[in-house]
Amino acid sequence: MNTNKNIQDKIEKTINVLDTINNIQASPFFKDKALLKMFAEKAETSKSWKWFTPQLQLATLVCVVLVNIYTIQQIKSANYDEAISSFASDYGLSSDTESSFFNF
Image: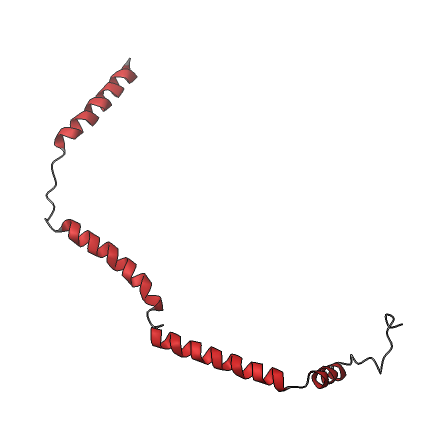
């Protein structure tokens, strides 16, 4: 019985606590300040790519295109057979010097 009385006392104390709660007076601009802080944090995270302006993007694109054009011209002007034979001789892959098990 003693535990039931203790439980009943705890319940009454909990209910009585609700009577002591007062209304809180917030400033009229509290909502505006909170929203500004929330959106300010989002704006700070987007600043990491702010340095990559459209002018810099255009300059990067032009550089990449120029490098690709130069590379394509170099590939077209190089003699493919000479490059392959040079590569094979540099790495010892030419078939005239060695015989392989797979060559019949």
